[in-house]
Image (cartoon, rainbow, N blue to C red; front, top):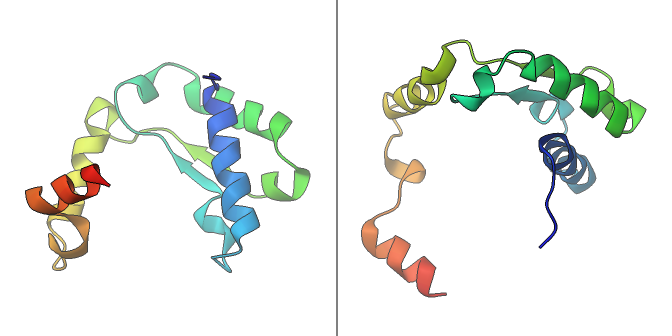
Length: 106
């Protein structure tokens, strides 16, 4: 199994989003939002942004940004809290235990 660094994994996702052409607005994949405890490492956002600039094609780099966690280690929790307060929650956001079992069997 080949290991991949963080900037390589993010760059691969950005490349796939760009190549798919699914979205007409490339700002969707040009904004990287860091979340969770490890995202609070000092300088991570700046380093990731620099490494992505060095790794990606120039037209993809144009206008992209890496956003550090605004709520520190609780950022993932705050995101889940926002989603759980949506009127469409749980709807498409959740699956039942039986649906998960069926998916794991396939």
